[in-house]
Length: 116
Length: 114
Image 1 (cartoon, rainbow over the protein chains, first blue to last red):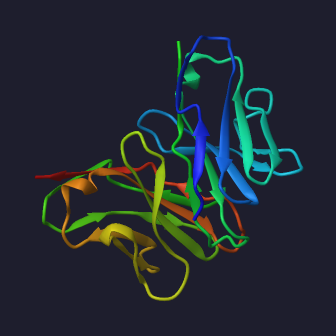
Image 2 (image 1 turned 90 degrees about the vertical axis):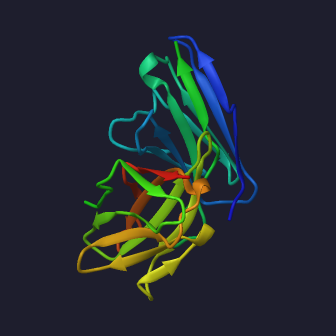
């Protein structure tokens, strides 16, 4: 398994500002993912963060709104840009272990974002 | 495209009784199936997975799940529920032939009544 930490754990932000969320893993991992979980909803994949290349975004998510960095195999950041109240959500970092698709993903504790 | 359905938004079970949380899936290739649990203000925790082999898989905290290929189901079960099992449960699927992303169900909230 992998131990994942996220900073901040929660934040309250003003409309129009940006917030950068950090994700740190205790071991080197190939695949890192960013999810959004809106209140009472399931998880929606925002993007896959690849080390050494551009992140791969899912339909409905764009780099200008959610820029991602992946400088090494243990760290990634997600920025929520020009925030609006609709961005209020829990943002979760996740990692895949091993190279096979049969491997489960592990999740960080999440960042609870409230936009006023 | 792969998909996963959890038909129940909420399940209520008396403590000590058996519990079942339902999940059905759809993939074009071989299904890789997962269950996760989310406690309040916590991230998701992995419970168990089915990849191949025995249809009944055992996981953490006494949970188990049964893979049924003909019914395309992967229901989560526990013989005797505890109040501490109250949480949000997510079923997830990946198409094993495509090395694709994991798709999560909408979640089922489990309430264990003392």
